[in-house]
Image (cartoon, rainbow, N blue to C red):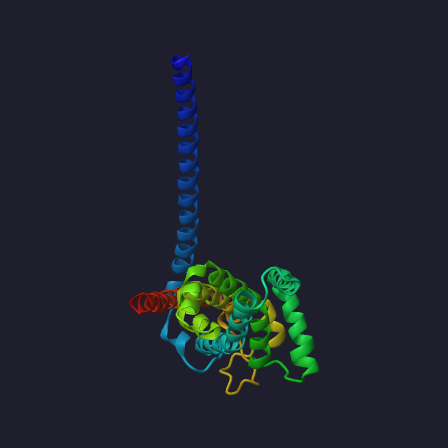
Length: 290
């Protein structure tokens, strides 16, 4: 009887070991395929674009001779900053209300979460048409940086709100209970205990929003326009790097410069990622030290 049990245990152990080995191979294979595809895409962009990176591409004035990307780069940074100024506070404070103040399991919380998830899946062209009808035509802003930034803020608002909400929910309740036990109020607990602990996750959501802003084209064509100039005011039109790259490639005359723009866009995204990671580490370290 004991020999039969031992034999059954050995078979179960061998089966579990085989499944574990298979899952490990699948995981390694998926990781390798992902890295290979990523490096191939990055390598292709670099090989195609680096030879066309010339000083003329970084002049402040755009013309048909240099097709400078500098106005588009500055417009991209302006668009990112203005969109985050609008969307980040709204998304973070809405998530704070849903997690810290609203009754858990209430219908309002469920409805807001459902609407946020629904808005996250809407194609960007729909946001562009809404922005064109509401900001450009109805409010009379015209094709402007402000209209494009407001449209993008609406696009990334559900993303920032949901990521902040999940980050706040991941903070253990013992942190809140300890602060309440020491006599801290809810507002002080949220801003001095909960938010610092959730800062890395919040920054990750903001970073995803920045990535969507930088790579957005369809919504901005209908709202911000495609003027190759540096906007002097929020009501002026301008093109971002993604629109600049699309315009050059669609003309068929500046394909090499379009690849060079893709290289600059890639470097910009990597730089934003590195900066956000550095800020998240410093905030986490400061919170742990405090």
